Amino acid sequence: MKIAFISDIHGNAIALDAVLKDIEKQGIDRIYVLGDICYRGPEPKRSLDLVRSLHTDVIKGNADEWVVRGVREGEVSDKALELMNLERQWIVEHLEPADIDYLENLPAQLNLTIEDVEISAFHATPTSLFDIVLPNADDNQIETSLIQAQTAQVFVYAHIHKPYIRYLNGKVIMNIGSVGLPFDGLTKSSYGLVEVQDGHIKTSIRRVNYDFESVAALYHEVHYPNAEMMSKVIRTAKI
Image (cartoon, rainbow, N blue to C red; front, side, top):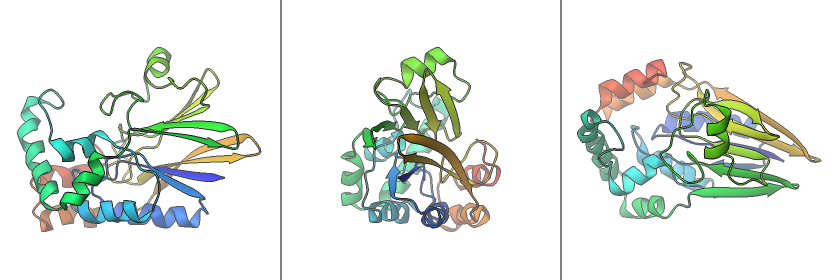
């Protein structure tokens, strides 16, 4: 069984197109989506429609929550708050009420059992859409923040836009990175693969080329409220 985990699309439908094409080539059996579908990208509606066309399990990310109810004080810097809510308003105006309802009602966690291998998947941590656990977090933070479903062998999360795979106390911890907004300096989409066969587990990260220059230009073409900054993030894969 080959499973693809994708996340943090952030309205970058061009990147999502590329990732879904790569997934098809890999002969994947199932795809799961770990949130952050629409916010901060030039094609929120097309991104959401592509995700929904997969007819698979999707969970909520912090950016999906922001689309539903706005960005609140304390969740971002005071300097960024007004602009990020302006961006959120632009996203909402490009979605339909039924899309907002869909995002609002997404679950927060996904628990899978594949051939007796238990996989726990969530956006940021099992208890938060917002908490940040970075690749260089110490073992104690990984254990207390991420490894809470003790019977699971594999823990998959997203949110930080920096993919990695790590092993701790007999567990596999994998961050799948971002489809639409990588932050690790590599201008390639990222997603995770988990392969289970006869009880064996194989995990890997795929990096996929996409036309990031077209996406950078599209922010300006659609008059996105924060086009200059977001175009720079797309071109540099850094924030």
